Image (cartoon, rainbow, N blue to C red; front, side, top):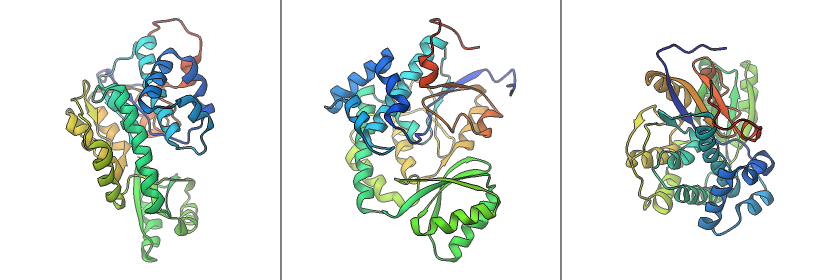
Length: 318
C-alpha cells in the first residue's frame, strides 16, 4: 500500500469523470439514500419530470437522465462522506464531467442550477453532434506510452487522417478523438505497439475541433448563469491551475469542451498543495484507480456500494 509523506496531510474531494452509466448502476442508491432522495426531488422540481422514471427507462449510457443521475449520485456521496466518514475538503477537483457536480459542492452554483446546467448541456451536446462531427468518436487506449502513441498517431497523420488527444490519464493511458473510418487502423497500430484499445465513446469530447460547441454552450447555457466564488479552491483539469473565482469556474467548464483533460497535471498540483488523501466521490472505475493516483495518494473510494453498506454513524475514515 502506498504510504503518503507525513507533511502531505490535506484532503482533496474529487468528482470523477462519467463512465458508461445505466440505472442499475446507481438506481438503488438514488431511491434509498436520504441525501440522494432529497436531490432527486430537487431535480424533479427543477427539470419538470421524474428523474427516476426517465432514467430507469432511458437507453444509452450517456443520456440526459443518466448524466443528471450521475451528478446527483456524486453530490449525495460527497455529502455522505462528510457526514459519515468525517471527510473535509481542503481542495477539490472535477475532471471532465466531474466539473458539473463540483460547481454545486463548492457553492459556485446552487444544486438546482447545477442540475439544470447538466441537463441543458446534455441536450446542447446532443443537438450539436446530431449534425456536426457525426463520424467522430473518442477511443481509450492503455499500456501505450506517449512515445509509442505518437508513432501510431504519426501514421494516421501521414495518411491525412485527423486526430486529437482528448484526455491524458496516466503515462500510458490516453483518449484519442478521431473519425470512425480511422478507428480500425488506429487500434491495430496500438496493438502492434503493445497497447490495448478499450472502447470508443460517443459523443466525443475535449477537442479543439469543438469550438462551435463551446460557443453554443456559452450562448445557450452558461452565459447567464451567475457563478459565485467557490468556497474551496478548485484545480482545473486542463492545466492544473488553482481556480478561486466564479468566473474561473465558468471558464473551466467551457475549456473542458475544446481543451484536453490532463489528469496527471491535476495530481501534480494536488501534491504541491500538500494533498495526501484523495476522496473520489462518485461511481468511478478510472480516476481513483490509475497508477498515477494510487502510487501518489491514499485513495478513499466513496461509491454507491460503500454508502449502501450498514455502518455506524459518524465513523471517521482512518
